[in-house]
Image 1 (cartoon, rainbow, N blue to C red):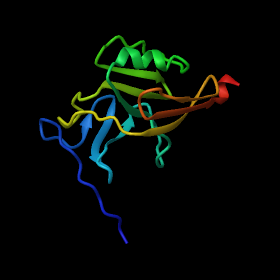
Image 2 (image 1 turned 135 degrees about the vertical axis):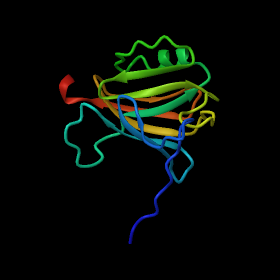
Image 3 (image 1 turned 45 degrees about the horizontal axis):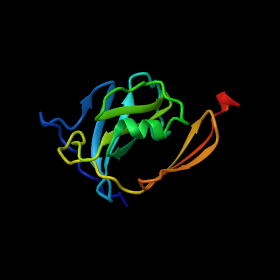
Length: 144
């Protein structure tokens, strides 16, 4: 039996498959979250899903959220007060101000409970003091 397929979302030009640092497509999951599928140009041979590269983390102040996450490695050095990537070449948190339109829709970013596990240079369990966010970091092999 074939699983139900969710329709792809279009951008403002009506495109369903976009090309920016690779091929990507967007869709709503069963909970109403916007998900992005992406094949990066540097990926030579893909045989399936390997990991989640980006996770949206809406907040009321991006700069403040960056300070909360200083236990994680960050190579992006984001300076934008409304939108910033925080992480490294293995994965990033996409920090956005609550209500900022989420591509490719005009739907505002919403704060929802989120628990994620990441690999980084240290082991720590972080529970944000205000937002319903939990981050568990475990040591990545290259940092052992």
